[in-house]
Amino acid sequence: MALRHCAKAYSAIVNQLQLIVVNMPLSKENRKLLGNGFYEDLTADVASTIGSRAVFIDLSATGEWPMSYYHDSVHLNEKGGRRLNEHLAEAVMKTRGQPGLASHMEQ
Image 1 (tube, one colour):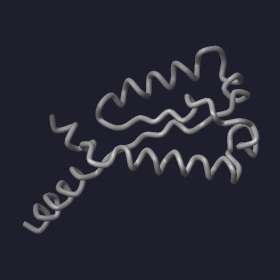
Image 2 (cartoon, rainbow, N blue to C red):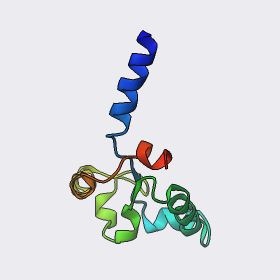
Image 3 (cartoon, helix red, strand yellow):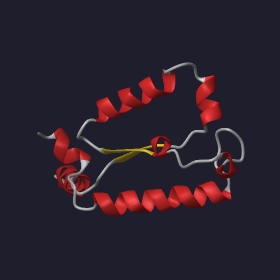
């Protein structure tokens, strides 16, 4: 009985959650190492797989990640991290009130 109560409470919480999948920024230099079209195909596959079950944010697609935002070709530095946080905050605010992953999965 207690387990059933916990499961119902958990389900109610999950139905209120939203899933946001973020494709982190990656430098042009690093994408070149992956081979022609690989990164673009991978990103398209991820977006397609997610579909409408979550919000997909492709930060690499914005083109606003100069090398001055990177510590190396993969990892953001402090300046890049601040910009990343701004993007994430904007994304969370834009997605407020949209259905969560669990409600999409039940359809």
